[in-house]
Image (cartoon, rainbow, N blue to C red; front, side, top):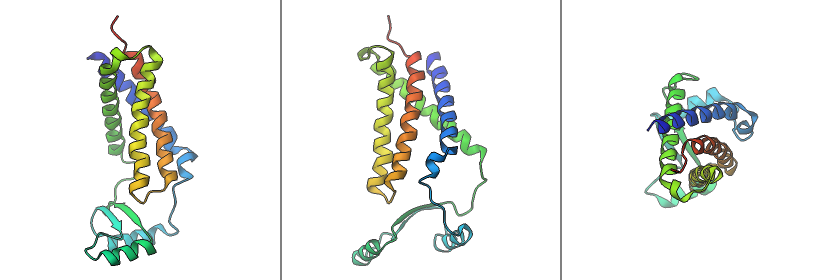
Length: 181
């Protein structure tokens, strides 16, 4: 049980550090767009999207023909909005992020422990965890670009971030989870 906790904490800490480096680097900023007038856009969003939530433009409608025309004319958007605002760089977000990464690391360690009998050496164990991450990233990050109005470049940024993240986790977890001798 000790190895689960320690390996999970170390993997989560390393992934957290990687996330800090990655998301502050110029890599993701190359695909993030900025509105021409944040204040005006914010005011318009509050006018037309009055409550916190996720909105689709055009919204779902019983009038399928009108919805189809609006969809084809554009714009098409999925908007996640928090109308009441939130603190910039809120420590709670970082705490929740670390807890999320810890959960991912603990679940990955558990799956790795289940797969140990069929895995060979250290490289196989690292590869197993990396494959978990690649699968999850392809399913979520690239899947989002198929099903929602999310640009492929944004999905690919997520894949790059997540594949490196899972490589880091794999390197740490594989050192703790070894087959019984």
